[in-house]
Image 1 (spheres, rainbow, N blue to C red):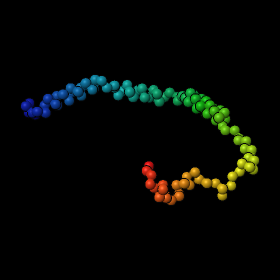
Image 2: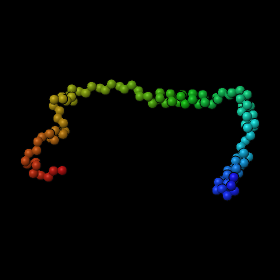
Image 3: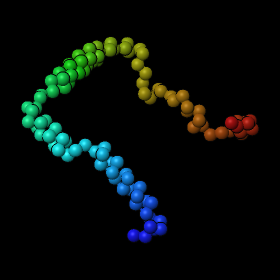
Image 4: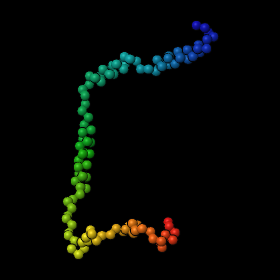
Length: 110
């Protein structure tokens, strides 16, 4: 190693960082023991999740029954005088289908 090598200060900083990381890291033995202790304990059934899911389902079902549209009553028949035949109907825009005449074209158009 050359003491005047430009990488020497960087290697020194990396070795300092490695030592600091080793001091902060938890020991493997302690981590392994904690994992083994957890593995030996019986698994607990989470009771809150099924109860919360059941309560939500019951609320949704109750809301659905409450807001469900009721059967619509049949509409009463209109009197026969109010019935219009399709052959008598004219569209409100029929005037647009008529050709322009000379009297209409002399004015300004939009």
